[in-house]
Length: 263
Image (cartoon, rainbow, N blue to C red; front, side):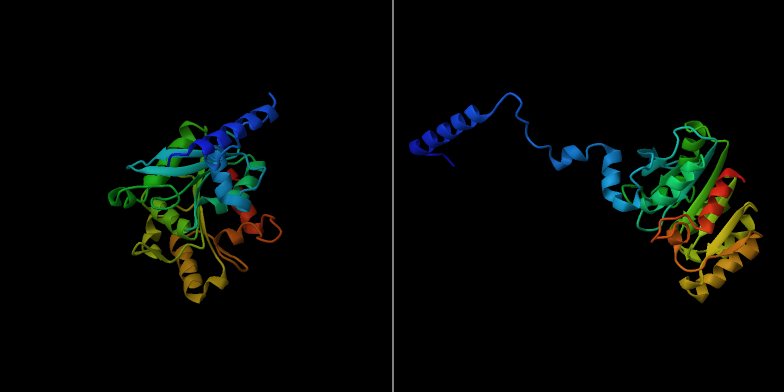
């Protein structure tokens, strides 16, 4: 839309007035939201809100899946470490691992958080998603080749617990594993049917609050696999590792830190 002559005069006068009032130290235009979140790590912190402690040594990462796809990941803890925990999340994504991973970092454990295909910013084809080791093998390579890990454990909560069992049964090369609150079946696979393929250095965690059917199935999985079964008091997934009210690491959370360090 074009302005009339009078409108042009008023605009020029307004600009002159603004110019006269501005000094050399006047701030420039306010940064846009896009400018504030252009850094991937800052954007992840903004998305995670209080689930990611302010003092977390966090770095957002991108990984290529071992089979294919683009995976959203993050590192919490030292850039180099002999002990690394690869963490698979609940359906809400990797943010919920923030508190436990920050506590684990105090014990010298570096955590690699990975969103599975179709969660967070991770994208894969159906064929890439079908490989239970696609995300895990990519994270294991990062842990060993770049972080310098001698010991790598695979830990998963809820959905991530079931995916952990499936990846380890498929041959993922880890030193130990833990399934915390994993559903008895995922993607049409009954986890107990994989028990014979699970290595002995693992554990299964479930609380009765998930219901008798899931609780009994988790205990049956542990028995069939010959690994310890750990009974949680109450809660699901991350709630069993870090108290959601106090923010303190629970006895089960401390046990997983010990599993990561081999102590």
